[in-house]
Length: 170
Image 1 (cartoon, rainbow, N blue to C red):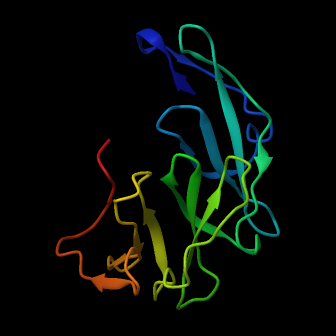
Image 2 (cartoon, rainbow, N blue to C red):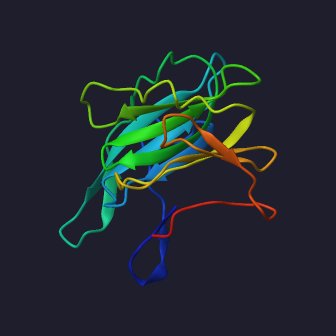
């Protein structure tokens, strides 16, 4: 469902996403892309679709979703977050004690991965990132510890209060 002018809601069919088991999705800040994590029996798929607008700026349709390769492409994606206007960070949990955070291009350009320092310890639950290059990225563990992924080594620090959500404003 989309909220359109006047607060009305309208459905949008996204070929390759509509009807699938969607675990997570994000819309870019400019409203031009939708990125989704689809649950599949042999591992999650990361897909991207372009959103089309009419002359008044209303979203009217979406291109068929195309799959975006992410690291090994095997396993479950825990969370996703925008890292730039054209790239998304992907949080996966390949082992019980180590998580992986990789950044992949969603605009069709060759993908890239962040340095291996983005392997926080523990069982990670959320990824908090921003498309602003100067902002830090964080992984949040199930026990509430926050790992800053922006330094050469993730720095874990207690949340200080019971953490239910962590996000960037805007």
